[in-house]
Image (tube, rainbow, N blue to C red; front, side, top):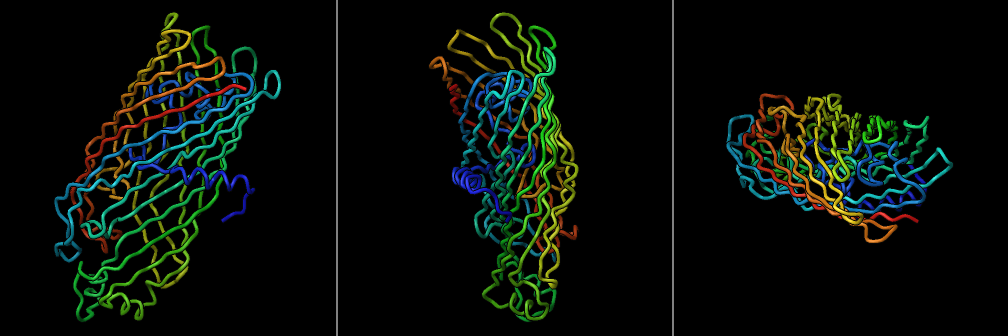
Length: 448
């Protein structure tokens, strides 16, 4: 892994220890939960700077919405419940795959911390820093479940450090630039049906789905990108915001480790072919580009109407290909063929007093995956958000925010076929995931 400045590595370890990874499956593996105040409005208005300092992550031009030295610290807790309902599981030869049918919650409780800071660098220039985890996934299947050849444990962690600057251009426009420094770390595990592979090779004593081994792939990398932002005051009551977050390219490098079955089928195949030996691995992972637009309009003395639209360019994710340093070990390929998606949100805030502000919002997030390409590692689907939240100014220089968002998911069928060459060793798997999510957030912002 690339050597980085020691304090940055320390911060990386701290955030990852706090659990900066989430089983988020609505917008692919995007983590949107980086602002507690925005939870209450279902993220409507974040690109227009309608909330607090956390909005600088979505659009760095929102730096100019504040003055002086400020710091923001918060965390969101994601309480997922996602279970699999089995219809059928068979291997490529048509035999039934034994094991438990699933039904356990595959999504553990996750905590997403974030940190933001901003300070003045002149009358028309402001600097800032965002530290968070914008991408991630985590799912855990019980050992021995019928889809074990497709997926067991899966995890993607990221850490994104974005220093940024915003400058006022004229009386009503702000331009901004940020640089992304992003760490990605992934671990994928599944069982290997050595009984089936040995039966196909006509090895005596082979018993499909009863002679399992295990594969574990892990790797990490640092990458970089940029983010551009624009904010414009369209009138005394209306503010617009635009941002573009670039793709970040990663080549994850690490280890591929195989545990062979006790019956010796894997050892026989390894001796004959040279495969299934521990080796170095690499895989390309490019987090997608994101374009966002936001609007904030003050409708009277107390109400503010909020809108956001975000496009995520997932269509570059055609496949996940794992390459092994061992030339006898063939690539592992998962066809993805994701599509670009839109996130739409509409909300409002009500300033009840100089101390209290209340928020409500509704959102729709499209799913990037076609039904026939959905996999149990990442059963992503479209969903709907309902958010509620409040801000309380507890002192002249300190504000506390709390929010909750309820997320309901579309149907998430799994229809994997062994006729697809990428599923031949894993078999047919038909069923569906039932998923629901509640997000709780708490944050504090302080001016120095």
